Length: 391
Ligand SMILES: [Zn+2]
Image (cartoon, rainbow, N blue to C red):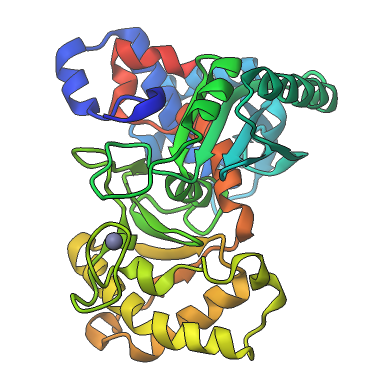
């Protein structure tokens, strides 16, 4: 279904097929504990038992294992309203790191983040040529620099975000001609390498350390030269039957609108793409005539798309992000809020939010992929097949 060996997508079927064992259940329960901890500052064992539904003894055993392995650390006692203060545990950010790569064509950017998504290796960028040996030489240099910088911290995995569709093409989209280079990176780092398109990766960054850290059900609209999206339910990316779920850029907002490269007319992408600005976007401001014209064109279709998405998915939040600068996202949101129909305005919370991770969200998300795989209790952990990816 998905090229390049991304994790299995039909997990529920795998559960039926493979069954589980005590060891696999332990792996799952351990992820339940890590997931609860990563969403909070710290928790006591009593709170972990209450939140997870596991027995106090099971929680004690798992926490002991995680302490011994260095994934969590004790951070002292917190005084409660009653009873003895409890010793709290928290994720140990320095247990390890993950390397993230964002492939945008002829360029590949990279950085490293710790277990809570903070950047611990600043990284940089290198040219992706068609020469595999040259790419491997770049990767060797990056690996050496990163190892020196991280010293005794273990690498927990590698994630690659790709600005191209990875699934079976449904649309008449120009197919990426750099997937071979992505495969070279994947083969260099081996089996603990995770690959996603940039919108899915950016959504995962939101889930690890961004606006959606405490949320399990949200949608992400990626705005850049391309317009995409991601659907996250129960903290898991939804891929759809052919792996194309979340292609919000091709939501039809006006059948008589401009021609889209997918073959249809009036797709959201044709109004929201920033391709026309290229690198100039950073030099433009909110008062620029081009920006004003773009906003006037983009706000109404985006509003229509948001209403459609809210009705289809009933998400906790919709997050606007991507490679668009923050000030532009703020202007977009202000415009949307002015005309958003009032059907849900009695809700206390804001329905649409802006990513605070900045324009590197896809790169941060690439690095988040292996970390979330480690700390998210998805049903696939109960199968032998998925154990391979869980080291
Ligand atoms: Zn389209």
